[in-house]
Length: 216
Length: 180
Image (cartoon, rainbow over all chains, first blue to last red; front, side, top):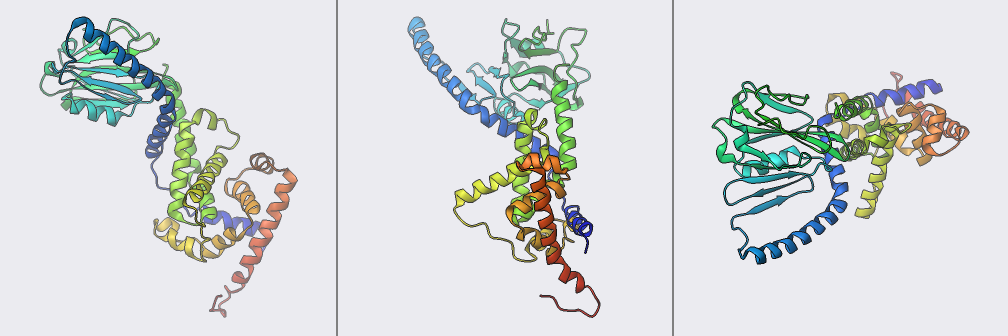
């Protein structure tokens, strides 16, 4: 038996073994690994924010003489913070420095009564785009803000919010939000184009030049 | 667009995964001996590779990085459990592989056992040089040894494999019906 025959025999064995794990599963797991690495840094930041919130809350409570609003709850992850208010609206803040886990945000939005399709690296749209987006989603004045307020009561029947997150780098991302018809939803890897009517798409991006809302 | 880089990275990684996943799985299987454990370790190592793809993608041999990461995780797992990782019994690897689809079922237990019997350094050289198809210089770089050491370990490994396989080849003659 020559060396070449031994080598061939070994390589033949190699070629008989097949891994069947889909690449999407690997990438999804990789995102979790990457997000987990950032938790210690993010956690220290959150601790500071939480401490400041306690101080601010105490100060405001004293200044205005009112108790904290009842019925307010907050879901806080490293990638986003979702606060549901007593009036039925919800405030969503996305941390552009952490990869978004779409299924988590989608489930949390739906738990707050906000039907949504959350994606990363792609965006879902519909044709036609339903009216009423400015009544559903409002953004803070700053063009670089990553915070929006959502009013699910203003969403027409048969619609949902499409939230598409595009990671630009390890530390920044852009997010687009659009009101879409659930029944005519189509998804693609391209960023959405603001419609001529000026209503429908809002971008949340830090320094991306996309911060101006397309809605009127 | 600004996200094009991320999409390119993902396509790049997907291509790398498609090309190297089987070789990496086999390389780890040879060392750990258990098909399910090898699959878990390789999947996790690829996930870590994607999590750090910016740097791993520039590694001189990303597949070797994956195998090394998987085997390091195997050692960590062993340390946590504080128990010996059993060397697979003859035929065990092939038998386990048979449960993972018809494509794995024809593994030759003699070759698998012969590979697991190799000393660690020889097995590393076989893994990187033969299973991952890196040349001698790159193998030396990945393993941190000299090219001449790679050649020496590979020659010894092939000699050991040959001596394990030759008796069986002789038994392939029709007159031989028993194996030991």
